[in-house]
Length: 240
Image (cartoon, rainbow, N blue to C red; front, side, top):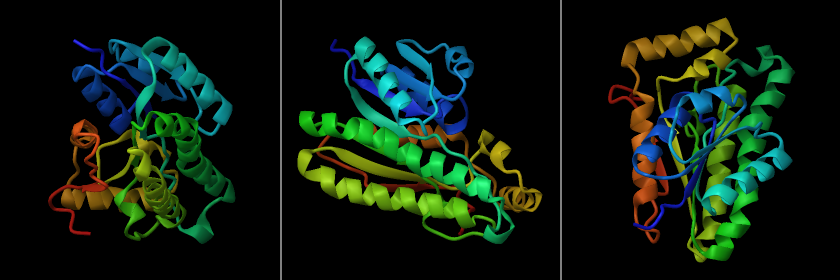
């Protein structure tokens, strides 16, 4: 049986990234797993996985990690841009240092990973990029001012890249989860914002990260000439 191609997942140590790594491993894909902490990646114990401590804000570190992963398992065929933070707050109440962290991780980090892989995918005329955004990239919510802006950016850059890569048979997809069980709540330092998020979760429930992971895997496993351009996945009771 031919070896399956390499999938690269950022923010793979927890939440959606962790569940996605487990889903892809179960489906038999070798993995290049990145997170700021290496130990949680290694603790997953997934077969055929290269686990590296990488800050997606560091473009050179991303490029070096890709070279390491590809030396072991061949070219990255699927990029899952999942690393992100959710420092929720009202714009006028937020420490500007949090703006920079949100933008650097949620935007620049996505660009660094895409830029590092797109030319090779284009040359091979094969590959898939899946950007994990948020429903907050399509709708505005209280306390989501800058965070929502970063996710609107992810949608916009996905649409632009999709158009430029489509003639080269490369797919660029955006997946937008709603309320999801995730460790990302740990990046919410504003108490009022965290209470707002928790109240919404208490009202409509939440989905498990496994549901998002299965959606990502399904989208990737469609034939290369088929693209699920945009996918939004939320609890059934989430009306907004």
